[in-house]
Image 1 (tube, one colour):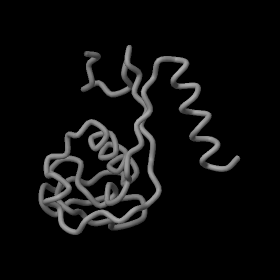
Image 2: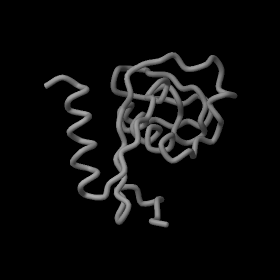
Image 3: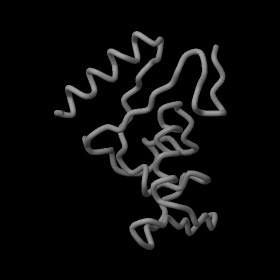
Image 4: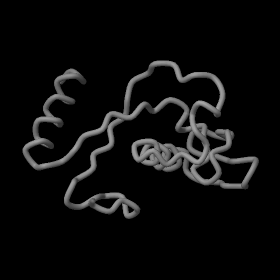
Length: 109
């Protein structure tokens, strides 16, 4: 199934269920520390290390949490201060339910 068709289907089903789908640019989320927003190092494909705060974590988990933070607008350091402007890449998708949320820090308004 083409990506655009899958995205349309997800948005359609989410709308029927009262779920808001937000597109999130994934650029640099795997290179940014989830704890302190500094640029970290991918020591191996699966590990992320931050030289600033000492975080040593799974790279995919670190990137996924940064995508969640970006969707919620909670980056510690604004992207405009983080360096070069992001280049256009494919987007990852974060789905939040308006009634209940998969993110414990999100409360329905």
